[in-house]
Image (cartoon, rainbow, N blue to C red; front, side, top):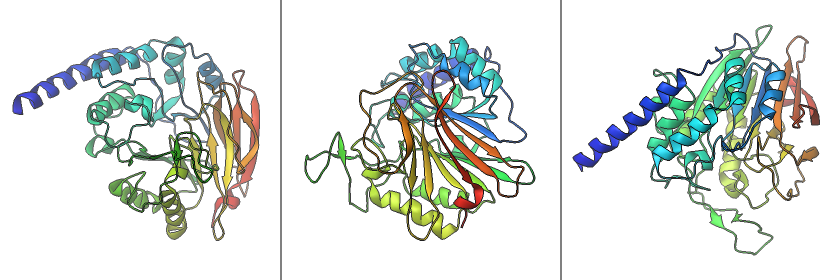
Length: 352
């Protein structure tokens, strides 16, 4: 057993070394001094050209957030996983993106390592190390000192406002989902699991999230690889674990956490959803997917605001801090950088 552990450590060190050597060639943007414009996207096949990243660069955003499936790894071979990240890093459009825009990231199943995988994926610790190295996570980051990749950052807006970026890990702790039983309107791959013991985030991450909601912030952008505010459609999402979805809404309300907006990916189309519950402000979810991937059909969504985007796309949140009730502009943008779905809200709309 000790011999196997030793071999694993040596192999992981080799992965780190290779990635560190490669990262020397990547010029990376520094942390912004303030944030008013956030771009984001997901579902990027490393073997495909990604010209839409040039449209992201043209927005001159302060941050770009990768929302998962940042590569299509799908392997338990960590050498192959690292090589697939390196394929992405070799793309000129990716190099230009990380040079111009501070880049943050969460993962989803394909870069985690296995389609639809949760807490039982056997290589999640080594996959985490490769992920953190690739996205240049500082050695002193708290992200390196706990299980999973959840993390948060707080940035200044203008005029004394603050914006919090909360990056969730929807893979490391997630229970297995229930397969579709073709009953009661269930469809596609999965059906809602009513079991109170089934979890999306896991106990430690829930406790951490409660602490994050106690931090002072005017807007909180929650990066979740899976959709939160949409109508159940049978694909992976928070709607498959409704008690966890309800727990999130209750936590926002009980902590009086103002300014929550979700951003999500995964489904291979773009849309804006609005979830309303009596007694609290509406929870918007801006879904952007994908950078290279599309889907043959788009599921109905009674919570949808405006029209969905079927082609490749990225999302953008723009904040005008310089008025008494700041305006937050949400948009999905197509391959030409043109907004095809937009929605504006005032900051007061998402405050208790």
